[in-house]
Structures are given as structure tokens and as C-alpha cells.
Length: 165
Image 1 (tube, helix red, strand yellow):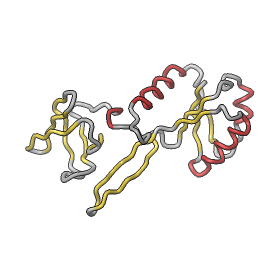
Image 2 (cartoon, rainbow, N blue to C red; image 1 turned 120 degrees about the vertical axis):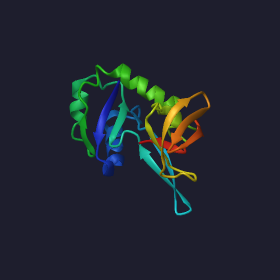
Image 3 (cartoon, rainbow, N blue to C red; image 1 turned 180 degrees about the horizontal axis):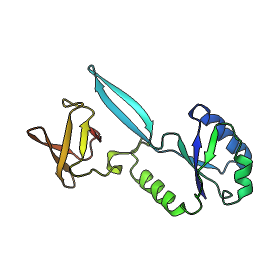
């Protein structure tokens, strides 16, 4: 049974330790992450960002029992459990499946996870057009065709050169 937890970022290690002590070794945590690369002053800055910010997905077979949740309510680092996670199990599992399917070999979410909106604004995050904004006109399996000012551009769909604004 999956649950969604809001946690204190400073005390994540304590939270995981407390859960492992109270629930045993069969507790599983999942937090999808993306890796942002940005070109700044002739250097590439790499940042790791959690896709869910200060939320964490946690799996244990006993989460369907209220007594288990009540015993975990005061663990260090835990702010609260999101309510109604019992009715949203299918959606949570679909989200986790989509995240794991789009992870690269290093465990980060690839750009194929994000659906690019046609006519939406996107920003280049590396390369010669860093911080320039463009709009998508059309796309195919390999490329995205867009417009940036008066210029038509083509960008590889599998690249991490841009992000949605």
C-alpha cells in the first residue's frame, strides 16, 4: 500500500530510520529526481531537484491499517500523511510506473517524462541560446520544431537542452 508523506527536508534521514525501526526492513521509499544542467559563465552547473519537492512516496503492506499510521504520526521529520491515499492507489502506482519507465541509467527522470505543450513556452537551459524562450510549432518522434523570435528552430526531443516555462 503506497502513501504520500510530507516531510521536513532537514530530517529525511531520521524519518527513514524511524520508519525502518517501527515497520521493519520491508518499507520502500521513492522520490523521483531530475538533474538540471545550466550553462553559466563558461561552466556547467548541475543541480539535483526532487520532482515532488518535500513529498515522499512510501510503500508498506500495513499502511491500510489506521493503527500503523497512528503509530507513525509522531516520527521525527514527518509533517503529515496525505489523506485519501487509500482511494488513490491506482493513480499513485501509475505515476511511479511512469517515473521509473522514464528514468535514465543514473536514476534521474529523463525529458521524455514531460509532455511538451504545443504553443507553450520553453526555455533553453544550455547551449548557445541559454535563457532564450521559444514556442513549439510541431513535433515528431525525434525532433521538436519551434519558433524563437523570427527564427525557426529544430531541437532533438531526447536532449536536456530546454525546459517548460
